[in-house]
Image 1 (spheres, rainbow, N blue to C red):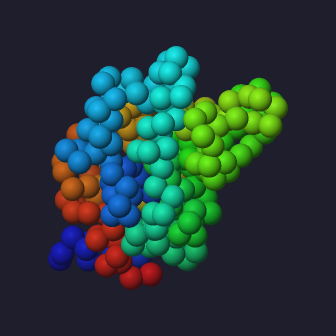
Image 2 (cartoon, rainbow, N blue to C red):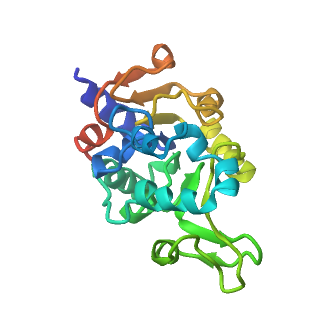
Amino acid sequence: MSKISQLQEIINSSDNIVFFGGAGVSTESGIPDFRSESGIFKSLKKYGDTPERLVSHSYYQDHTEEFFEYYKENLIFKDAEPNPAHITLAKLEDAGKLKAVITQNIDGLHQKAGSKEVLELHGSIHRNYCQICGKEYGLEHVLESKGIPKCECGGIVKPDVVLYEEPLNNAVMSFAIDYISHADTLIIGGTSLVVYPAAGLINYFNSDNLVLINKSETPYDNLATLVINDAIGETLSQIKI
C-alpha cells in the first residue's frame, strides 16, 4: 500500500483530526521559510545583525523604524494565495473530520482558504494594535504607513506577531493542548519540530494515528504511524474528501 493510500485510510477512519503546521505549509504559496538556504533569515543578513535579533522584541524596541522597514519588506506577502494544503484542510474541516488547525505561520492563509478554527501560535500580520489605546488596525494600515505605523492617538501600532523574547499566548497554547490531547489523529506538516515551545505540543497527543509530513526528517519520525517526506501541498492534494 502506498503512503498516500495509508494516509487516505487514516483520514477515512478518523473523525477528530487536528493539524499542526509550520512554515513548510506556506512555502508552496511562495512564502519563504525561516531557516533554509532560501529562507527569510538569509535575506535579513543584509541588515548586519543576527537574524534572531532582527525579529526580537529588544530590536523592535531599540530600532523600531528599522524593524518595520524589513518587517514590511520581508515578512509580509499580501498577494500570497492558499495552496492545496490549505484548501484540503479547509475541506476536511467542512466535512466534519478536522476539528482545528494549529499553525506557527502568521500569514492568514488558512483562513483565506476557508478554515474557521485556526489557532495561530505566533500571531498574525492581519492584526495590529496600538500600544497606547489598544485600537486594532488591519494589514493595510501598516503597509501604507511611512516609517513607523502610528495610531490616531499617536501610539505605535505593533503587529500581533510573537517576536523572539516574547512569550506565546497562554490561552492559544491551552486551546491547542486541549485539541491535541483529544484528537484521534494528529497530522503534523511542514515543520522540522525543533522550535520550542511549539514543538512540544506533540507530547500531548495520546492516540494512535500520528502522521508526519515534511520534506526532511524530524526528531519524532520514530514515533509516527506514518512518515511522508514530501511537500505538504503535493501530499494533501491527493486526498479524496
